[in-house]
Length: 212
Picture (cartoon, rainbow, N blue to C red):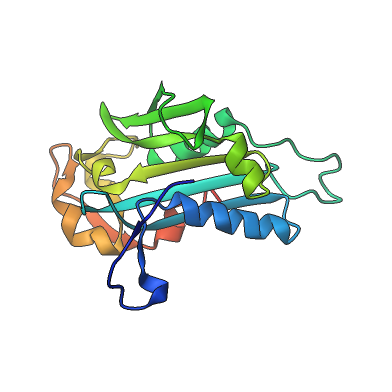
């Protein structure tokens, strides 16, 4: 789907390519699962990529291919196929409220089903359906992908808002944050005028359990 930069003097043959995106690996993994009889493939990956300018960035990638769920005797008729709205809602459940702006400049996505992803007015990534060439070349079902720039995702302060009717002195204020980003982003967490807060580190898989 995307080109990679090849190193002239790699440590070994397995470490010879700098990946500019997580999407290639996710699509290959989805293809592998489909070739092994899976009809509903939902995968995510978190990792670093290298831009053409040599800048290292943390990315969060998602792929959903095929049916909304695996066919079983319990669900009777074959489940529906994943669609843009359903996929976008899943991503929003993970990231929080997002805004989508239609685009047509991402070559490996369908020109009719792609959008830029914004949060709090800041661009954080893209979402869309893999185009027909990508789907056919990798033997994929209908496939949607999303890649989020993790650094931009955390660029704005995280605001904790009141939601409980319990008196403020009795509220238990908790924030979960990834292990690797605990030190980097704790200073960005703002509590609305109160210092009662517990910051807990969490595993990445807990955050995206809604997706899988």
